Amino acid sequence: MKRRSLLKSGALVLLLGAQHLARGATIVAVRVWPAPDYSRVTIESDRELKAKQFFIGSPPRLAVDIEGIDLNPALKELVAKVAANDPNIAGIRVAQNTPGVVRLVVDLKQAISPQVFTLAPVAAYQHRLVFDLYPTQVRDPLEALITERLKDSGPAKPAADPLGELITQQNQKPGAKGDGGDSKVASTKPANAPQSIATAPATTGANGLNGTKKPSEAKVATDAPDKTDRLIIVAIDPGHGGEDPGAIGPGGTREKDVVLRLAHRLRDRINASSINGNTMRAYLTRDADFFVPLHVRVQKAQHVQADLFISIHADAFFTPRPQGASIFALSQGGASSTAARWMAAKENKADLIGGLNVKVKDAQVKRALFDMSTTAQINDSLKLGGAMLGEIGRVGKLHKGKVEQASFAVLKAPDIPSVLVEAAFISNPEEEAKLNSDDYQEQLASALMRGIEGYFSKNPPLARNRSV
Image 1 (cartoon, rainbow, N blue to C red):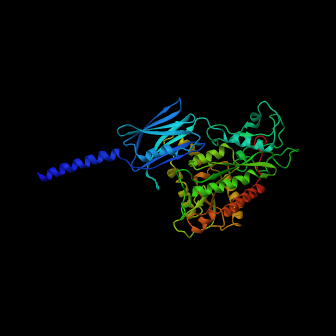
Image 2 (image 1 turned 90 degrees about the vertical axis):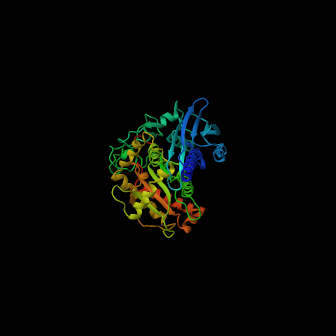
Image 3 (image 1 turned 90 degrees about the horizontal axis):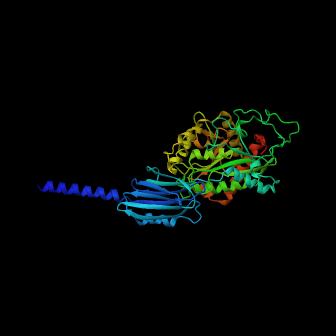
């Protein structure tokens, strides 16, 4: 009888404990990631949280009811984490709506398209409840590059619609579109001006936009100058970002931070340069600390019609011994080495760590771009990688003296020569210190710039459909 009573009381304790746990999920951390592309709010907890969302249009705000939890100090921290310069979030309010339900209201600065989803534990993260707030009105990044170029080139000739005359529709290869719309190119000439260079029929080549033929194959007008007159765009992709810190050095240096600083230095050099009189412009896939999915990085480069794509990372390994910079290109077959295969597998996990919403309906359609790589794109990528590797070897050690190849998801733009640069082994204490050194970053950025110029000296950018 006594034992039966103990068992009953034990069962009651277990039942009460389960109910308490259901309402007592522990909040591990709260984070806010502001960015022009979108703003993200993350609530990390020791067990999965369930939420219901309500969007109110006027004034714009998102209400989220989080179930199975009571208001606590950790959730209240969200209020103070909103930055005044957040382009999308004006403020956050939290309150106990009903017992066991906390209501979180995100006041917005503009109309947004919200995505609310959960992420299972991965890497150093436990369960995450994520709110991604995408603005419905986004400025076209290509138009921004064109506007910036016009400012630098002086007053434009009067026109009824100056920007309209500078943008023309670009014919694209089947399946090579960016964000689902027609791409645009800039022209420095009126619509009725004669072309200086005639574009050849499309091929599978990757040098220049849309696979136009190599210079030796293109038909050039008799009065054509020795150079094109168009905007050359180099897409720079600082790896990781936001929820994904990348590799972390023994001294606590985060990969996402050092590669962003290096990308800024390379951007400044590109924007101050020209190729055969053609203005150059850098386009960063992320210009701040926020997460960008791998397929979106590819799409961004395609949308601005980039001539090159350079993804910047800082290598890591299990031991602190490996050192030196590496450059990778895509491989349609097997990896060039076991290390290259391991590196590609590690980098391709960025979506899991950064927090990709796999429930988005068109995610699989976007990922279809990854199956469209071409032999010509890979060949041009190897040329670009070789030119850059030679210059990097002049300022630091190389891990290997040749361009490696593996199936990196971020390099699979079918029409853009693309390389992934591992600037150094952040897991090596000496190289971690170098990555934090302004002097070494300056040297490395200059080396990368010389590599870009060396590539274009042997593979000049071709004219687009109209001079740009």
